[in-house]
Length: 414
Image (cartoon, rainbow, N blue to C red):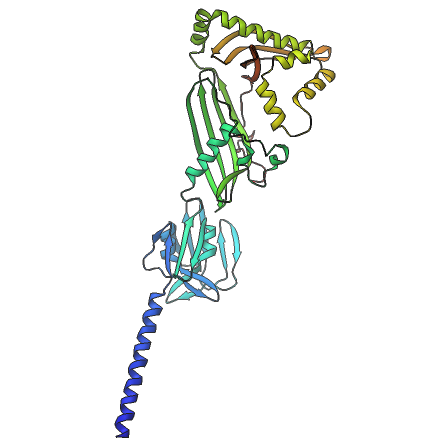
């Protein structure tokens, strides 16, 4: 009787042990780490964690990242090539070479079941992938730097070009120290009567340095009724507080041309609105006369009051526009002469004059120096007359996209 009981207990113990073993094996299989690359599950690739480091079999991993794999039988060197980047390593060695740089590992590159394994996080970061590991779900996800971010970045740059608002700067942008951060540039963006015929923002190229940093070149093309403008910028951008921000910038190309139909527009204004045209030109001449006579009161009267107001609110410092203009009159002797002027746009509250501006600096102006330039002069109607608002020097085109040696332009620190 006792023997039968003993056999029964032993059988029960073996059965329970077997069931626990099967359950444990099943649980272990279920907890194999699954790899995702850009939200795509990589079948048959299961990273392993050894000594706190996650490793992955290099061949299927490289295939998922888009590397072309080569092997040198003589040197036992394994290489992976993707675009202009190359990675080199050797099984059981503790170094990895990537684009000519050497990275030293804490442990030798292991071989498991005749497969060479590489440290996943290091290779992913070198290949510009961010890595996230969810231990509870036994998943590791790789995501290309900037994946799906192009639209948000283009939106940032489009808005910036329209407002140049410091609210769009990153916290390390040095320009923040010179601007009024309490002024709402976007809310106070001026609305113009001048029609924008075409506006295009093109990201020429973008290079993600990390998941939160990028460098790029952008071309802005904006064609209006009076000016066809193309600007090319280089930008450093940062991802801060779930938004992309501008850290640094450089204008490397500018092209300004008047539209092909501007003569037709000027002729139409001359024929159909001559009286209004004459008033615009008369008021503009009064403005330049006030400048030449250093008449502060009259200069203020014929300067766009909104421009003065925005200057006082935006420009960093305690001096107002009036006080700076007064100092300019006291310490300089500028003289302006407007010629070949014509009105090329005339709205209800805005006008644009095209003409040649010749300026000199009193008796000290050097002989033979050409101070004349072609300009577009923008005016606003205010307080019963036309006032000077802004001016564009059409002769200030430049191209610095490459230097004298043919090297591409770059921001400092690149």
